[in-house]
Image (cartoon, rainbow, N blue to C red; front, side):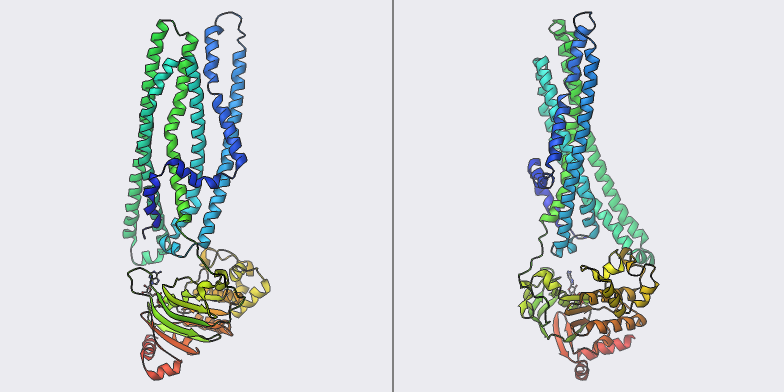
Length: 589
Ligand SMILES: Nc1ncnc2c1ncn2[C@@H]1O[C@H](COP(=O)(O)OP(=O)(O)O)[C@@H](O)[C@H]1O
Ligand SMILES: [Mg+2]
């Protein structure tokens, strides 16, 4: 698996303060004003009610059990009122939380999917499809619910602590001072452990991705794995990753559990100190029974928010780590850029001048100073050994590959100055690998354009698919399923041709469109292709020389250069590399 670019950014991100990191994801969650207002309001109310329970105990104990002036029935009534208010505010806070989370998630997901649609194609070389799907679908969901939950809980805990501490100071400030002394110790524990947790979280996300990738690969290659008896090696590859994932998960659980254990011990120390001192004070009769019980109750009530506060930063860092992977996806992958030039329909003059393409810095150029011009309406065949750069050459036209030096012109205009959508609308591409979407046949054929059912039918007919259409239960509306696996190679190929016919672009690129087919289906496809090529500028990359003999001109490629060019007959007569290739092919079949 290739090293993904975002790994490099983990380290600097870890050094940023939490607030800075929250500020980066904030724009996605700041939109739901009403959600935040409701959430914060309800949280404040819920926290403010916290000291009321011990505050009710004080008069109850000090005066309630003596017959006197105090109306004791007020206490249960107040208790009922108190819990009603708390329950209601708790409900509203939860509800608001869900709103904020889901609104943010909606924005984030559509921004990320938008990025998938507009990012430079290098993104798909650097990241596997499972990693991308995982980030867009699962990670941002987990991340945002964890983060927003944690932030509101953090707010509730802090407010509850403040309310309780305020009450404690009011009751007995000396005792409260002792509690305060323990704060720095707890803060230190939290800091150290949450850093470790952050690192572990990032690592386990990467390991999860890798695990998913192995599964994805094995699903795609299930036949090859069985045929080659590679189950054992694949299983051990999977096990290795599973084990490292387990190790990471155990480590992070240990860090997490250790954090709350240490916090609890610190809290217990504080409590013990408070109780001892309060007992001493009561001996000097400066504290009443009610005052003491109220104080200890308030102290005990402190433990829950205190403990949850110590855990509280964990979901924040975890949530942030997950969301940051989504943000990195958007920030580290620039969009494709195009120019301004637009033209409804290109006439189809193409010129490559001194074009070089280097995929990786120190690799041999895939295209090397190549010059070639193609006239509008011409059918050009490109032949050459595998790896000679044929696919690279044709992929330059819709800018699926970027030029390293030189220029490609369409109708005399550098393709980099063409508006990208307009440029791409000039090409139909049928390649060896046909990808079909899990939608109806009609949608697959009309891809990206409104569905005109009559035209879809015509295009399918012209692509020699009328017979298939008649067999399908729901005709045009039959859903093809996952990559249309139930169709044969030839049928899939003809669907791609129907798609190209429907698009009706002026320039046609065929990249080994028929090389994966047997002779019988090739004949069907070939006929369909002839109809498709009619009246268009066509670039045909082909292995089978039978496809080539009708071309106006044939160019022969070798190591990223053009080494020969001419008609089929001329090249054969010259007896050079082309004749050699031809002879090889004859020997094959
Ligand atoms: N995405 C890529 N990254 C790196 N190298 C590539 C990539 N695509 C193709 N190449 C390399 O460029 C050369 C030309 O490949 P290609 O254009 O696919 O040749 P052909 O279609 O003639 O078989 C090969 O050496 C191949 O390994
Ligand atoms: Mg190729």
